[in-house]
Image (cartoon, rainbow, N blue to C red; front, side, top):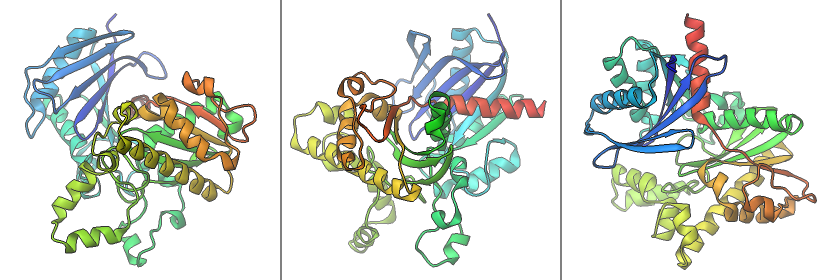
Length: 393
């Protein structure tokens, strides 16, 4: 049955995830997904509708502007899902700086403010902007909105957000921003639904994907997070190093590497890939017998456990740990390793529950609750977009 549809766009550094939501209810209801990997030739639109999946080839070519890709994708989605008019489009935007504390309608002023923040998120911000601009050119009739990964962390105090640099740099925007906020917002709301008594207490959520971070949450609000000024900081990631002695950067620069070469190394050739020399994918490393793969995963688990403990110190207590995102949701061995390292805090998990990715995996003897909660950033984007559309109408 045809129905007004809300689209969501979740742009990664090289992929675009799409969500299709029915606008017939108070809360947008997802009825389909899509994904385009912009690195693949020829392009393929992977669509999901319930349990059914399909790969649909696209004729469009990736160019500086994505008009051709977006236009064909919209046509294919309209044919495949037989939906009616597009009521609106919501976008995940990584960086909102201090300007955006919540979702925003896309107009000329908002677009300029998002563009001004590109230097703070050079890997992700331009991709979101390309999609917004293309859709504005192709379908200026569709209202668009932006949902910001940084907005969730605006509840942190200035004392937490201040970096140990001369104070004037804080006023110039060099501070802890935090990321993965849409994921944390969703997980916090899910935990409040599943276990409201625990959600109101001291919780550390581990968002473990190719990009990864942890967040200290109390009563549903962000108190601190491992990613700080940029998406390079915190725990080790697929190709990013996480926390790194700044003296290393100075040493590399004085050794002759250009800023661009250092940036490329830090964003694309470090992390699990750099540690193992094998793969950036934790699944590949788990399947490998190579000692380098084992070392990389050990490093990953250790930094997650270290950061969980340090965020517990910020909260001055720890009542629950939540694992989420691709690795957090689907790799029991890594969860077990992290929790073993936190045994000194009283963390203990039930091996059978962990092996089947149960929603709650802590053992009866554990002093700290441990959950596995799938994240859904697109649901948050859809709900925020729907609220702006309703307010505008």
